[in-house]
Length: 150
Image 1 (tube, rainbow, N blue to C red):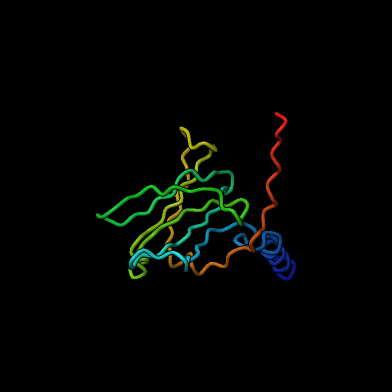
Image 2 (image 1 turned 135 degrees about the vertical axis):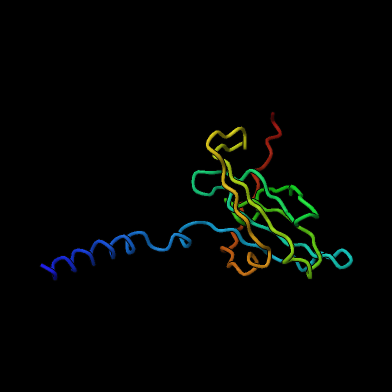
């Protein structure tokens, strides 16, 4: 009886871990890149790349925050080489990178309109994001030729 109970418990607890796998590997994750070409005095450009979807939620805003100092909404656009990602550029002094928090806000509506059931906010740090391995770049297809007949 004890052996069959032990075997049953082993199967119950081992199967979900095999079936589920590592969730982080299957989802797109945010990451950052340092732009070596950009230099404005002592400031440097860090590109924050975030998945446009997180579960069933859509990226609606990106904020840069430093307690009692600033709270800035950062504009983001489609990431040219990373389909499914949005890109935001943040310019700071390299020595101050660790002092800022980055917030990715996701909403259940694609437009970020009124949400009755709440959204999802993810707090990140530029230094941590620089350590995340980026997905391979995808070269986009050339643009379609313009139709001059219309």
